[in-house]
Image (cartoon, rainbow, N blue to C red; front, side, top):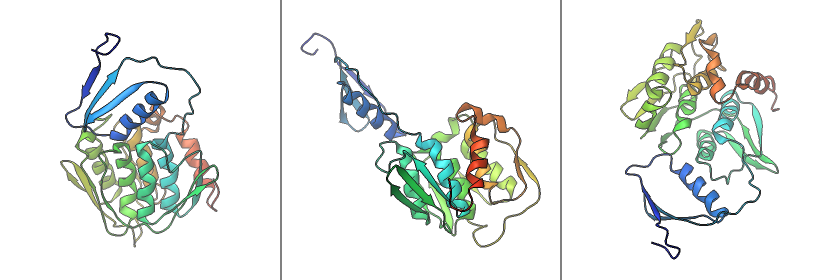
Length: 255
């Protein structure tokens, strides 16, 4: 028991994924007088404390920002992500680093971050900490020279859909090649140096907003691709289709 007679709480997670979300929560808690200590990897101790109020600055959602960033990277355009910091504690910030590794230009701006597209190269990475970005990266992979490997994301099978199976099925439906692993995807960049097929295709988002938004990115370069149930994006971004039209309308490097 602590000095006030209150018992500290301990939280232990046997196999933690999406670690940055925990780090972000702990940082916010500490910033307002809370106490949280990581005793060892996957084990935290919190103690009763008097939280203080104050102003909280809410950052832009980097899970959402990944879509316009990916659209610019894929199409060779450019977009300014207002308020997005490359120093953010949000785990999905790392998707911008992945884009830079693939060949896109990712640069700090006075009020955010700019992404400029370029020919993309394949990468091999463990995405266990940023699982929401797996469908987005998978959407880029057929257009990236080489073979993209996405590893250690078995937990994606228990999201709104089995996202590994869903992206495998829908990329194949669109004409890409995908090897589905127990915990990842292997995707050759078939369309890096040749045109994708153009036969009309309607993809199934499997009731999952992230599958719909990721496959919409594929449709920026793969002609005649439609989403069977576009309304599923309402879970996280009801205005997504209007925003997508706005980004792609700025084809000369605008926003």
